[in-house]
Image (tube, rainbow, N blue to C red; front, side, top):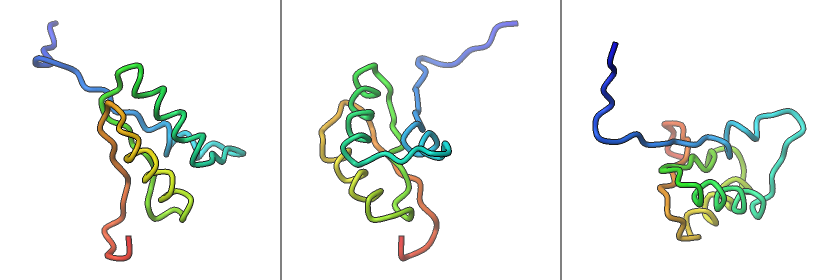
Amino acid sequence: MTVLFGESIRFFDTTLRDGEQTPGISLTPAEKLEIATHIADVGVHVIEAGSVAASHGERESIRAITDAGLATECCTYVRALPMD
């Protein structure tokens, strides 16, 4: 059986959101930026930076990652609520 994927495969990393849900793990904005930098350096196409609804610190982390000029796309998980 042959499976065709088209011309390319894109990698989407959820470490900064999903990984932080591990019991006992709480990353600082600086730690998240360092991890995001390493993820981008290995060629991941999209980094899910976190959830803006989670906390002020999470929003600070997302801003630092998007402002860093990494060679990757950055996205965030949001709810469909105006306050987010």
